[in-house]
Length: 88
Image 1 (cartoon, rainbow, N blue to C red):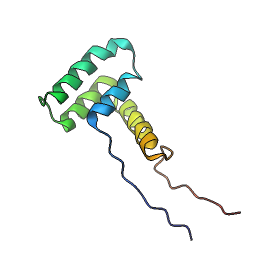
Image 2: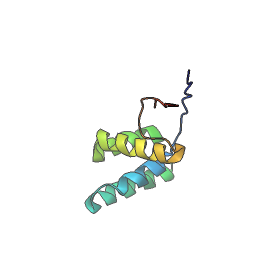
Image 3: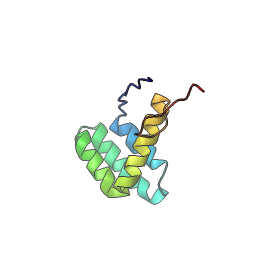
Image 4: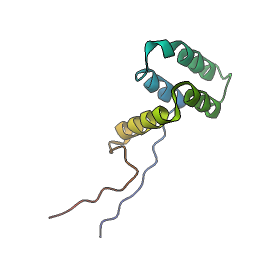
C-alpha cells in the first residue's frame, strides 16, 4: 500500500500580497501597496492583512494564489486531494 505524507508549506503574507498583485488590474495596486507597507512596518498583523486582502480582491482569488504559490514551493500540484500512483 502506498503511504502519502502530507506536508504543510507556509508562505509569508508579504509574498501572498506580492503574488496577488501579479493577478489583478493595476488599479488595485495602490491599496495593495499600502497594505504591504502597513504589514512591513508592523502597523497591522498578518492575520489582519489577509482579511484586508480578501476584502480588496476576494477570498477566491486569495485562496487560488495561495494554492498556486504553495504548489510552486512544494513542487506539488495545488490540490488538497492525494494523488494515487500506479506501478502498472
